[in-house]
Image (cartoon, rainbow, N blue to C red; front, top):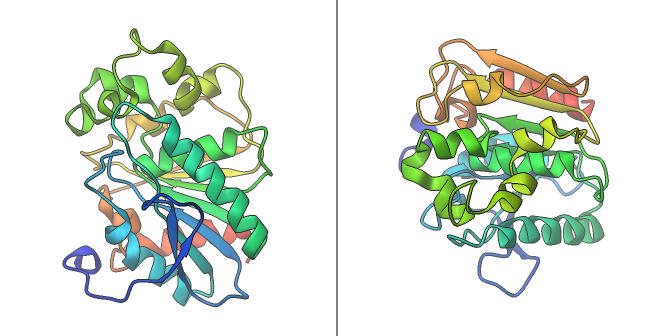
Length: 242
C-alpha cells in the first residue's frame, strides 16, 4: 500500500459547496473528463478526512476522469448533516460541472454512495461502492471500528430506529428500496476492518452487482499500487460506459 503511506503528492484545487469548513471538494483531472465523485471513508470519524484518498483521486484523474474528492461533515451523534452535505454537493456540482458519470465511495463512503444510489429524489447515477459499511446494524452489533457506527448515529438501533431505517443501506434494500441506476460493490475477502459479510449479505437486486476479490484487504481497493486497482478501474469503466 505504498501509495497511501505518507502521501506527499499534490492536493487538488479547492471548490466549496457551502460555508462550513468541511463543505468542500478537491478537483483533479481534466475539466472535460467524465465527472466522478469520490467519497472517502474513515468510519464516519471526524479525525479522518479526505487526505488518505488523494492517491486514489489522482490515479482516477490520470485515467481521464474529472474527479471531485468530497469532504463532508462527520459529527458524532448528528448523522443527518453528513447526508445533507453530500446532497448539497450533488446539487452544486451538477450546477457548476454538469451531472456526474458515477459516484465512488470506500468504507463509510461506500455506505454513503449506496444511500445516493437508493435516493429516489435524486437524479440517477451509477455507483461503485468499495468495501462499504453496508449494514449499519451488523456494524453496531459487532462493534466495528470501535463502535464507529453508534458514535456517528448517536446510539443503538433500539435507541434510534428511525435513523437506522433511513441511513442503513441494508435496511433500505430489505424494505424494498430500489437503486435508481446500476450499482457495483467490490469487497476483499481478507478485509478485517469491514468484513466481507457486509457485502455478501446484501439482498439480491437486478441493479446491484457484487464482486468479491480473493486476497484483497480493506485498503487495497483505493490503493493505485495494489494488484486489485485494475479491477476497480475496470468496474468503473463499465459503469461509466468508457
